[in-house]
Image 1 (cartoon, rainbow, N blue to C red):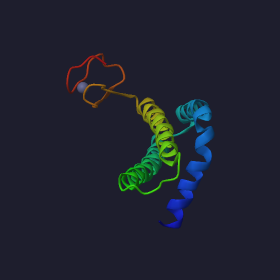
Image 2: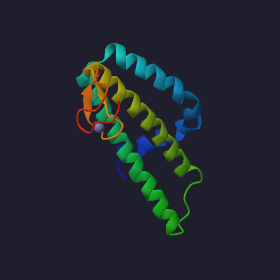
Image 3: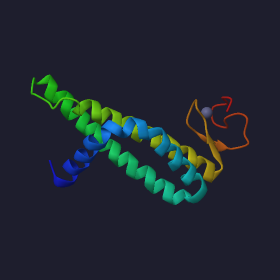
Length: 130
Ligand SMILES: [Zn+2]
């Protein structure tokens, strides 16, 4: 495990306990700030960073599940902490994606994922109601 990776994980584990309480407020603030201040390119960078964080968490979750499968002793609560951290990242990601759509003036189709003009009533790609 490299130094950067383990320091990220340590941070996750140490903050996971309070993360649940803080998550909704932090995400709310981030979304508001994002909508008001950030340009599309800054949002894209933030989105990329969150996706990178999530990849690390997915990897760690997989490692812990496999260790458990091999009957290795894993530190209690670690998997739970990783999963909770993923929940937070996922919420943050959704907020940022929404903010990006607002900045770009597009609306994502819930059915097929295509980006549509904000004023469209129906998806230009699949015809679903927006
Ligand atoms: Zn569609």
